[in-house]
Length: 201
Ligand code: GAR
Image 1 (cartoon, rainbow, N blue to C red):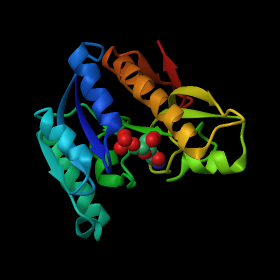
Image 2 (image 1 turned 90 degrees about the vertical axis):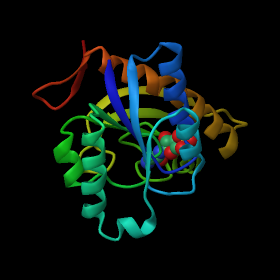
Image 3 (image 1 turned 180 degrees about the vertical axis):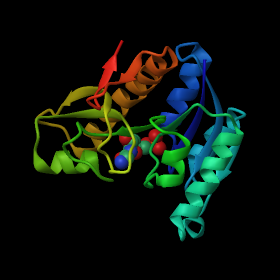
Image 4 (image 1 turned 180 degrees about the horizontal axis):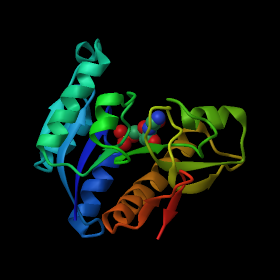
């Protein structure tokens, strides 16, 4: 059993998938705190409906990004979180968080890293015209979207896909793959080797 803190910035469909996996017994975890970088997003409602404590920040709180991350790190430590799960969190995690949770911060990215990093992974892959994109789950570090990869799943782009239909396919894979990858962590099966690469035991 692991304690999770989930970081969001939006609708929180991946937060919901994690909440559901915990409720179904597919993920051996407890969500102790949801932190949102915005105070008016539906993800916060999802957390409240599930009875999970929340911490909502605003743009003003990030004027000093290090102070914001100090505050988030201290709330997550107080909540006795083991792993920090970024689920559509559209802010960089900085030194105070990375130091408080070394190799314990996980990110979800809607493309096959190292291709199409950044805030628009699905649209960037679609606009490029790739035939294959997908979902990546990786450890977060100081380099945006560059941490060791835990899991990936490919999604084929069909000839008749629109950006919207591709988004739906990607989200469906995210909602399945993220809880599965977190369950590997809960089982202690995810190890970072001396070469910096993840090995699944
Ligand atoms: C997800 O598609 C996630 O992969 C993406 O934001 C979405 C959040 O959706 N994250 C990134 O692009 C990170 N660079 P949700 O709020 O419904 O979970």
